Length: 210
Image 1 (cartoon, rainbow, N blue to C red):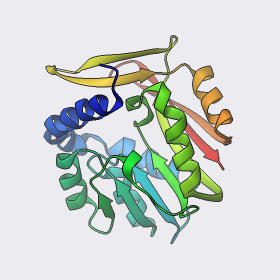
Image 2 (cartoon, helix red, strand yellow):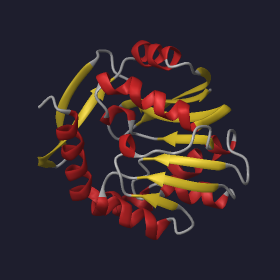
Image 3 (spheres, rainbow, N blue to C red):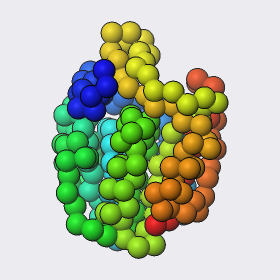
C-alpha cells in the first residue's frame, strides 16, 4: 500500500476504532499532563494563537485553553474529533486531513503536533513541514514529538492488543529527523528526551523556531 490517500484512510480507521480506548486513558495521564503543561508553558503565552494538528481526545487543547490561548485544531478521525470537542469546548476543531486545509500565511504564533509526524510517510514529511512553516508566524514555535529509533523504517503495525487494527508508522532516527527539521528551514530551540517506562521507548520532543 503506497498510495498516500490509502495510508490516510488506514490511520483514520485505526483512530476511529481506538478512540474510546484513548479517552479511557485520560485518568492515567495526570503526571503526563503536568509535565506537558510545564513544558508547553515555556513556549506559549496567554492570548497567543495556537494550532494543534492531531489533538486526539484533546488533553493538550485543555492545557492550552487553561493557559488562555486562542486555539484551533485539525483532527483526522471523526470519533476523536467528537471527543476532543467535548473535552475542549473553547477550541475550533476541524474534522479534516491537514493536507486539505488552507489557513492563511503566518496565522499562528505556535503550532503543536504531538505523536503525529510518524503517521506521515517520509515522502510527504517535507510537505507537512512546509505547511507548518507557511502557517506559522515569523519567529513562531513549532512543537512536535516522536519516538527515537536506531534504524529508519516505514511499516504498518498492530494497534497494541487490537491485532486486526493496523496503523502506518514512519520510524525516525534522531539524525534523520533533525536533517528534516533543518532542511525545512527551522532552528531547534529545545530538545527534550522523555523515557516511556511502559514500553521502554524514548520520545524526542522538539521546540523549533521559524
